[in-house]
Length: 238
Picture 1 (cartoon, rainbow, N blue to C red):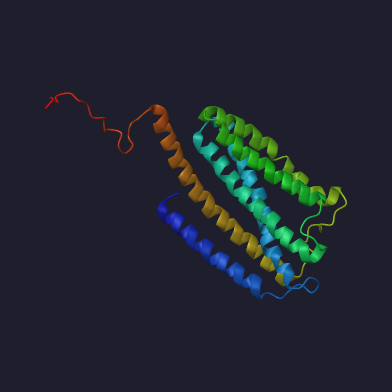
Picture 2: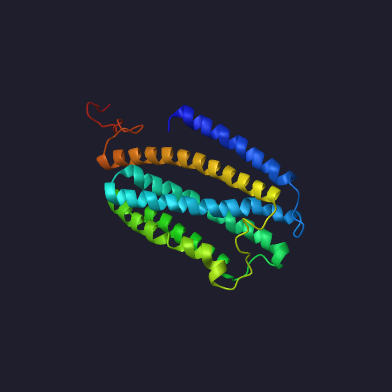
């Protein structure tokens, strides 16, 4: 992404995020839960953007297996990192929301357990990328794991329908118009934030790849590489 496009994306993201925050704090509170319901404007978008991020990881993984282009591997890795952040945020916001509604931060109900498993599996994905030094092997193993791990997404989403659960089912059509509009604005804000983070992370990944390739090639283009140790040649005794 060129610099002007990246700058406009960042400006747009800031404007939309500010609008979402203001809207989330000023829209009327839910008649049942009161102000605590406002956590939904963080919890739900974070969960959806985690799904989106891991979906992009699948796309990058499949594309790398077909083309072997490093660009796709960088996309898969960068999106997975952001997806882990969003998953952790969704879990944290859900726990804060659960305390006043359920009376406790955590219960071993299906949606929470499957989401926690999703979080730790993708942490394992990132750990795998750190553990394998060879770039080709790392990309291949990570691509396979990135594809297989995505199977959890429909399980997490459908868990409230497949098993008895304290967690509410989809509320897209059951909340009032102003609250639903606020929720969609929050989703849009999180989407722009994801796009900005992905753009920045891809640029960093490109620089990391260039540094790694230079290291593997043995090029001495680092500061101080041309400095040699002093010798005693030409020195006479006093």
